[in-house]
Image (cartoon, rainbow, N blue to C red; front, top):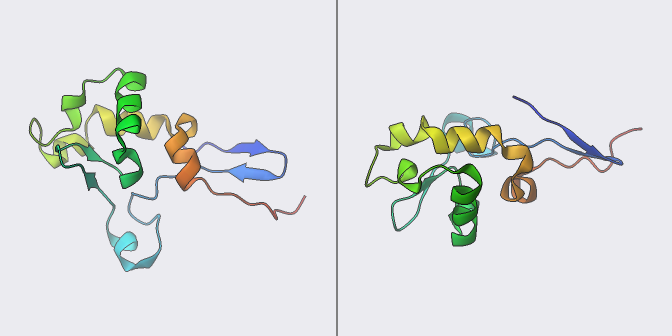
Amino acid sequence: MKHLIELDNITIEPKCKATIGNGKGIFHKTMGNLYITSKGYVLPCCWFGITRRMTGLWNESGIDKKYHNIHHYSVEEIIKGPIFEWIENNMTGLEVCQTNCAKEERDKPL
């Protein structure tokens, strides 16, 4: 699902840099990222690992936080589970995704 947000001469195309092929370097061409907090929460990137962002994720999604914790589920189950699906479906409205991973094209021809 691809969403574009256009504001004046700025195009924002949210795409998760944590997925395969979305970053620079050989690592990102062959593998995606994961961030696991010290308490076992699995997230697509370190930007989500801040307490206020995790709390916001739980509050906004309404999904129980145990669904992305390695003390309750395997990493594979978490990646295929409801939290990762919710993040992917809501990237255009998530401040963390917009701030850190949106594509800006300020010099785009008119």
